[in-house]
Length: 423
Image (cartoon, rainbow, N blue to C red; front, side, top):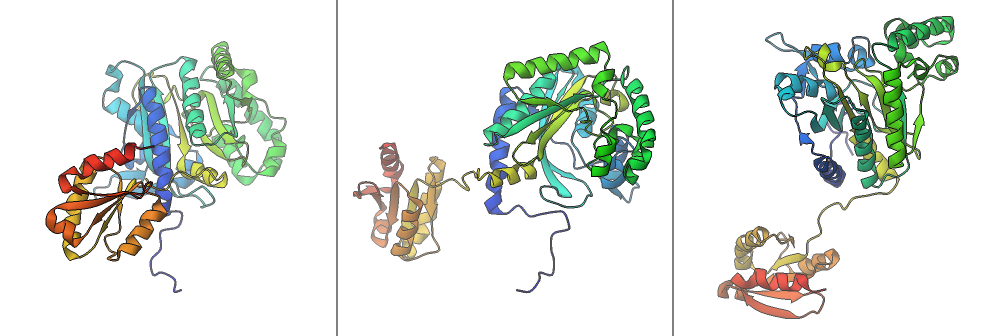
C-alpha cells in the first residue's frame, strides 16, 4: 500500500469512530459528577496571549521554555495555543467579573490543549483534558473535593487500581526558607545532576525534585523535604486534608518530591496514579497567588485536570471498553423502489418518537437486511413492501415470538412501544 501523500502532523492523531465512544463515555461521566457538585461548564479560547502563561505558569518552566506553540499575527499579537487550562480560566474569572458572584465559583472544562514535546504513549502535542477549578475558597475541604471528584471520575470509568500522591510545597511565608536550603543542598550535589537540573537549580529549583533521570534521583535522596519547613497554617491545611481523605477512605501516600512544576502552585499538590501501570492520570493543587499575578487581587483557588488519552489507554489496557454505539431496538427493512422512497419520512417519525431504529437502506434484498437485524439482536423488525407502501400500511415482526402483524402507518409507534415493553 502506497504511503499517503498527507499525514496528520507529528504528535497529533485522528479520533476515529471506534474511539469516539471512549470520549463520549468520559465526557458523560465527568458531566454527571461535576453537575452534582454544582460546577458550571466554561470554554476558553484555544488561542491566548502568550504572556498569560509566561506570567502564571512561570518563565523558567518546561512549558514556557520548551513546549508552547507560539505565533505572531499580522497585527503583531503574541499568541500561544493553550498548553494548560487553569491560567485561561483565572483570566476569564477576572475579565468577566466572576468575583461578584457568590463564592466559590465552580467551573469545569473539557477540550484540546497543545504542548511541543516528544510524542510517546498517552502523550501528544495536541491532547485532550478535562479539569475542574474551585475559585474563591481557602478551606482545605475544596482541596479534598478536587481530589474526590477526579478519583470518582476514574472509578466510574472502571479504573480502580489508584493511589493519590500528595505533598505540600508551602506558601510565601515558609517556602522561601525551604527553597534556600534546597538550593544549598543541590549545589553540594551539582556534579551528580543532569544538565537540565543544573540549569533548573538556578532558575526553578523545586523542578529539580521532579526529574525522572536516574542519576538525579540518586543525588536527591538526601535533599530536604518541604513538609519539614511548613508554617503552622500550611501544616494545618495539609493535616486537615489528610484527615478528610481518611474519612473518605481514599488511599494516599505522602510524596515528598511531588511539586507539579508550575509556578502558580501553593500548599497542597497532588497526583492520582494507576498502581497497575504507574501512569499519572490526574493531578492538581492549590494556587492562591495566581489571581494576584494576573492582576485580580487575592483570590484563593484549587483545581485539577486529567489527561483523556492517558485514561483511554488505561481503559483499553484493562479491557474496560464502553459500548461503541447504541444498539437499536428496532430494524427497518424495505423492498422495492416505492417502499424505499416512503421509508425516510416514516423513519423520521420514529426518531421524533424517541425510538432507536437501525436500517440498511442501501441494501435491496430482504434477506441481507434481515441478516443484519438478526446480528444486532433487535426486538422488532419493520417490513415495508410495495403493497404496504401503496396501502399506507406496514408489517411489524416481533423477533421474540416471531408473530407478525399488519398495521396502519399512523399506528406504528403504538405497536412498537407495545413490543418494547414486553419482557
